[in-house]
Image 1: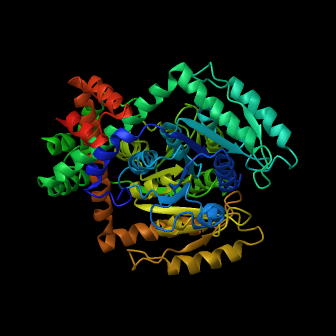
Image 2: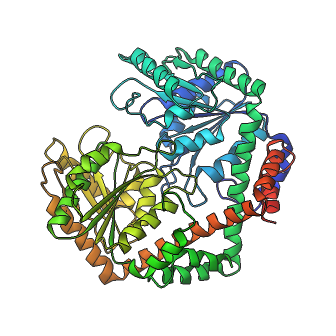
Length: 288
Length: 288
């Protein structure tokens, strides 16, 4: 129902509201090739070993057209396919309803209310989506790996401002220690608003499980800090604000389409394209 | 004024409206490392040789935090820095006003009205931004290059549905011919809505200028086809529709903030975060 933006969704959400807000929402992001799926799978295993129920949302914001998002990831996650304590879903965010910002919070809410202790949101970490996943999560894990194109040099400055925990995966490869050093320096230099949390840098080899327990501990430490510092409430309120606003904007759009605004919009757009009208006046008339 | 979303912008846009709509808007996109900036620079040179005035907007949607977008690109474009027939601007789309969708069409309109014959919009081609640039342009040029990670295999399916012209850059390297063959096959198989335009695949070595005249011709051929087939009007009306809608949504947001909606939103978000209210009911109350 979330994926289809079903009209019945609002009833469901009303019913679910009292049950949500318990899960720890963990975002995972990083450039292609750093081993996000393997890390997610290893993290699921480590959380299950602690008897925690886990939901996984694999979001691919680069697939606006094709429905078959992250099929490879689904296959790689098949270790956990028969475990009733794990729910895995790939979502292609098609963008027409605002991409990640619209559907992902709803899906998180459903898994949360269904009793998941942890909801992992994995996203292909490129461009805008990195920042969006940080906005959705309680704890954002940024993955890097040694090797050309995946190191800190290649990472955009933005990535250094969103991570609550940094992971250097493939730590058995040459250069891992250097990536860690660079990360520590750059994270130390970056202009962070939450100065009292110092993001740790964890070394892992997700494929063998090495360091994954350290990662779980770092993630849980951050969750504890969020609670103690009062930041959790703040982050969740901000998330709810974005969610409510996205729904309100979608509702307003639906409303002006409902009163014939769609035809108006086409006519106004034609006048703007022809240079007869400026887009601001057109927008005023549309709202009017 | 566009970058600052200045309140005076609407006056300016009203005054500019009759002068816009003449420029050919060309989008350039593709994965990192394929030579987008070098290609843009080569394209500017070739267009200048035809005595056309050129505007260049370099948009980096992955820089929501840092203001110094694409500094490297500015430096590389310095060949054209003293040419009064070229205007170059790097824009970091910070996302808070809807990223590309809000500011870029306005900036295009300004360059268009200022008398640019061609406006090149170069974007870091990852994720959502690829699709957005296609929505903004009359002609979308998709660049690829031979080599690991840059080939067709690595390109997302989405890229094959947005290109009007494909470029295999760095064509002096091994594998260029194979990338061209794969591209032709995949473009032929993809489900294109505009079946009567067959996107050509052009080989270039942008750094030496090889093939750049072919690229200019392909881009101009597409422009001619758009005009003859009536598609230009259609694309521009769609673009104007998106632009008007983005401005209308921003205006509605500003309006509910103006009547104290911002405080309402904070309160409603708090209730949603606490599980006392579902986000749909909260959105209804906000609109109310």
